[in-house]
Image (tube, rainbow, N blue to C red; front, side, top):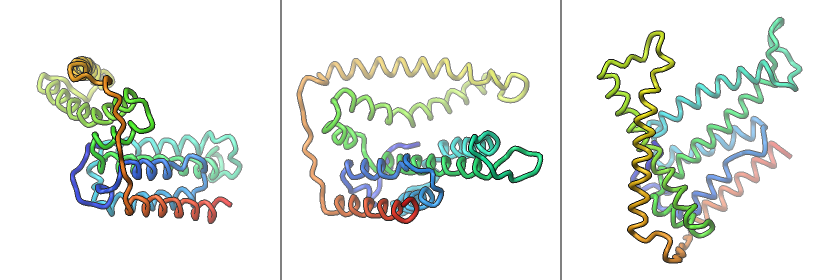
Length: 242
C-alpha cells in the first residue's frame, strides 16, 4: 500500500517536485462547492488511471475512506448546524448537511488519490532529493522514512494477525473489541526495534555530516504538467466558485 510501483508511465518519468505540485494543487481545501470538488476529483482519478495505477494498490485505505465517508454524510445530515431543508418529515436530516458531508468526502478521496499518485510513482530517494531542497535534511528524511514504513507496518500487521489466529485468537464473539490488543503490542515492539536499528544504521553512515544540496532539473514534460494542472484548477475555480 502506497509503496513505489515500478512503471513507465508519464508520472513515473516526471520530476518529484512536479508531483508535489500536483498533490498540493488538488487538495481542494478552500472550497466545499460540490461541482468544483467533483471536477477536481474526476481529474485526479483520470490521472490515477492514466498512469496505469490500480485500485488494488490503495485497497486498504479505500475501505476505511468509504466507511468513514458514509458515516460522515449521515452525521452531517443529522447535525449540520446550518441545515434548513428537511428531507423527511419527523427526521432532523437536512439536504445541506448531506451536501456538506458529500463535499468533504470528495475532498478526502481527492487527497487519497493525489497521495497515491505521488507515492506510487516516486522512489524514496527522489522524494528525499525533492524535500531536501526546501526542508531541513533531518525533517525530509523523517517524512520519507515515515511514508516508506506505512506498507511495511501493514504487512507486519497482517503477519501478526495470522500468527495470533493460529494460536487460537478469535475475532468474533463477545471479546471482539479486545482482539487487536494482542496485535498492537508486538507491532509496537517491532516498530521500536526497527527504529533503533534504523538510527544505528544512519549514525554509522554519518548522516547529517555533509551539507549536501540536490541539483534537480525540471524538463519540458514537467512544465507542461505544472501549467496544465494550474490552468485546469483556475478554470474550475472560475466556472464553479466565481
